[in-house]
Length: 139
Ligand code: CMP
Figure 1: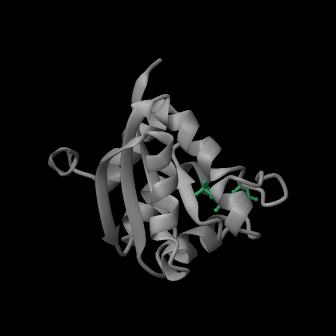
Figure 2: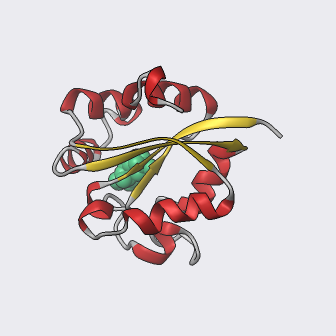
């Protein structure tokens, strides 16, 4: 069992809909530990850096515009297999495939306004955490 750290974002729709507490509680109830937490307006350059792998995709500009439109919540979590567990808790990106019981499965019908982001692998988790948190901001 690998203890990992990963980045979660509550997207603007999650903040606007008042779902921050509900979303955070799902990782906490699973037993994952919060080691960083902040509410912020996502700077354009940082949003572009986070989503650089999607540059050129037809949804890229819509995604960047959405993510920088209103405040987001950045959450760093830690725990055994945290990267995969966080993605299971979030549910599939496609709303037709996100299972009931997952955050997206319970609360979202839209592939862009899908409430949460979570890093997809160890390399990206390290890269993405460094975009949102300085080392001294992590407990
Ligand atoms: P996220 O987990 O933040 O990673 C990339 C984001 O792109 C994804 O969630 C969606 O919000 C957004 N997106 C929009 N359209 C698509 C699509 N067709 N395929 C994948 N991601 C998409």
